[in-house]
Structure formats: C-alpha cells, structure tokens
Length: 230
Image 1 (cartoon, rainbow, N blue to C red):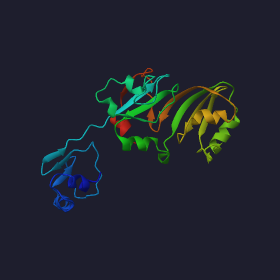
Image 2: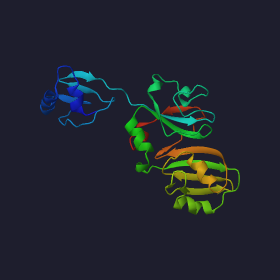
Image 3: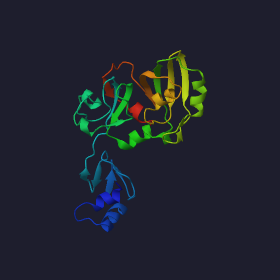
Image 4: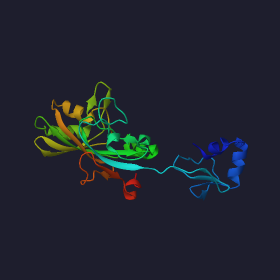
C-alpha cells in the first residue's frame, strides 16, 4: 500500500490531511522521515506519526528446507504431510512456498512471509537459474544438451521453453539448470526424448544453494548474506 493511502485510512484523516502530514515530514518509515506519498509500505515496516507508533511491523522470515520425498508442497493437505508440517515455528501459517516441488521431488525449498522477495527469486524475468540433479530410466542422449539449449516446443501450451543448460554426469545422470518453472517441466523435457525421470533433486535457486548439512526434512533460517542479494 502507498503511504498516503495508509495515512488516509486512519480515523479522522482525509486524503488532503495525509498529504499535509507527509509534506511536513511528520511521518516516518523504519525510523526515516518520508515525504513521498507514493512510497510503498509493507507489513514489515515500522510506521510512526509524530513519534506515535501506527504499525509495529512484522519481522520478515526466511527458511531453507531440504524437502523429502512424499511431502506435499502446500500449506495444508487432507491426505499427505506438507512442508509446513516439518517446521517447528510460531505462526508458520503466515509462510508461503517460494518455488514448489512435486510430491516425490526432493531438495531445496524456500519458505517466507515476504511476497515481494519470493517473487524476485522465482519469477522468470529475474533470470535466476534453478539447478536440479536428474536421474533417468534410460541413458541420456547427448543430443539433449544441444536441444535443451535451443529450447523445446510444448505443443499443449504452444510455447517454447527458455534455453536450459544440461551437464551430463553419467549415462543416466545429469545436472540441469532452468530459468523458468513450468508444470512438470523437467519430466516433460526428458519425456520429449522418451526418457523417464526416476529421481529429481533441486540443488540451487539463484544464489541459494542447499545447505549440505541439512538432512531430508531439516531446515534453518537464511542468513542476511543469503537474503540480501535477491
């Protein structure tokens, strides 16, 4: 919400009065005077007017989880355990998932209550790669390296995937980096060559790499150094 609209929603404060309050420098956000009414504020911001606290602000929270197989990327599910069930944190219902994984896909998952931050991490426009370790049923045709880099056409959506980097690690194992996240994309890309994905593990999202000390089902808070670059 814009700061001027936030102030105008206060009792006995009109839009005109909000503009005057801002012009006189009487409002502050996170301890800094703000005169620009178009300044965007969020639930994490501390807002004061003449030293009176109007909004205390919530702490932004960021967690890295090593998702195990057999766990749903959802906040609630009637039949299966969810990733939120793995967290022992207060008010965890306020968190959302930044980049979901399929039921049996494992690896790096981020949970946060900061929607703007998570969109920067996951939206294709940010061009932040997501890297997966892939195992397949049959040997991987080396032509996949070139074809994935060119982009594959998906007729159902009538679209071509963005260029992806495929590194062959063995006859049936590869590391794949995508710059988008379409429905079952990795499985469908290998399915294009009639090869079934038997295991899928996300190792990295943008600058965030899964902590190797986290066992499946374990999590930790992100450090400021991990949060700030996004």
